[in-house]
Image (spheres, one colour):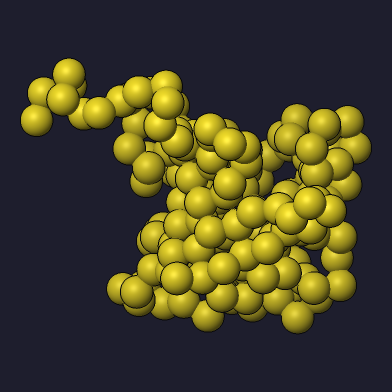
Length: 165
């Protein structure tokens, strides 16, 4: 189908693609504690990831973000997708990956501090608000498993709701 027939219109709901990566090493998960200066998620733990750049496929973006922000590599597999309903016209499409650490030297990042955290200690940390729901599901998954599909939105009181399909 030619580009002109793709149905792109400013009146349609559009999404911004992002990746979110969780690297494991045995019973540990590599998390990023957001820098105190960050506008979003300051001093909160999250996976590693970011925006998909023009010309990248989703997996290449996840690998790039992992190398840029952490300096490590992993054998990644897609665990699922989360569509975040951010506004009336725009959403965020998050492609969630998991992978076993394969090497590299962790390096400092302006995004925050990297830490290997034992899986049983994670829920006791100050996490970004969706991590207590997403991360246990991601850590249960195995390569080749069926990816999940989820949607998240906020109610009138700004409380996050995540629904799995």
